[in-house]
Length: 279
Image (cartoon, rainbow, N blue to C red):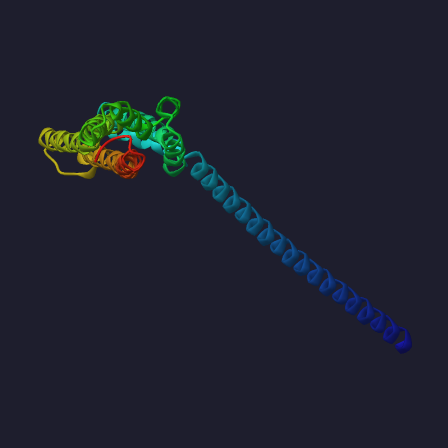
């Protein structure tokens, strides 16, 4: 009887310990599952956060790309007021048209003066004044025009007549070279003035808004100050661009004029050397 009771008690203890062990394993598995689930949730949350951040960054990049270049210029143009911003823009368009026309004309007038003078000297040395005149007529530029006038007056046989003719016609050619520069200088001076006018009017509007609202706040004066600053910037930018073109054109004209003066001296020397005129 005691043995049976002992066996029953042993079986109960084994069964209880076995159930306890399985319960501990289930609890451990549940905790592991919870940890894994929580880790997965954290990972999912971090992934979601990273995706959201990437989407935000992508949207910011897209916004920056959309607002780059012409979009920014268009935005600032509208913010500055189309009425005021269009005035410096008109000055820029007209000034660039004049500058481009002058640059093309000046490059077209430029020739190799040394080669031209050498060809004229060959014809004059051979006694072919008419051939030299024909060469001048078929050559573009102010140097050829001055040479033609000098050779045409050389038939009178006086060096003074040739020199006066060259000097007079040289002045005419200089006037043609500088054609349009007066208007270009006008637009250079006018663009900042128009910008400053927009500045003054914008500040007046800002003070009127302050007076009407009775409060000095950024939202009240923002529009007027925006017009004031943007129009000034626009006028200065236009003046800087046109000033660069103006200086380039004047330097090109100076080079052509220096070439004209050197060529005129060479013409007189050629005529005296070949005894076409009397010194």
